[in-house]
Length: 94
Image 1 (cartoon, rainbow, N blue to C red):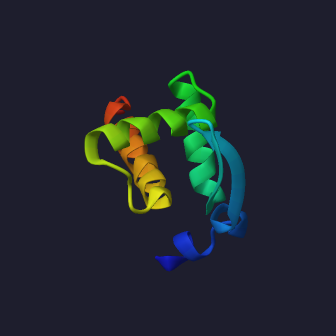
Image 2: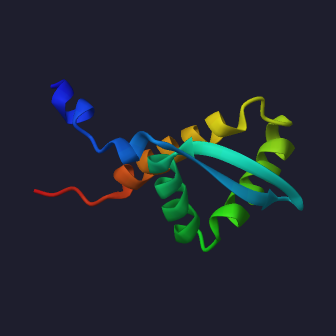
């Protein structure tokens, strides 16, 4: 069973730091490459660049809940929510 997980390409879980501007402030975010791929796909599906999507997300989170304690964790959980919603919307094959 663990071969499915253990056998994955190490590039997927290697971390990459991206520098970007979030709401006019320069910052860097470090995430695993797989999460960056999901965020890129999510942003594109919403019609945004990745940095514009992350800026919008940060704005909305601050309005709803205040400043997030761990923004990287928020981004990872956002990816999981996106994948869950994408799966739920996928057509069921017979």
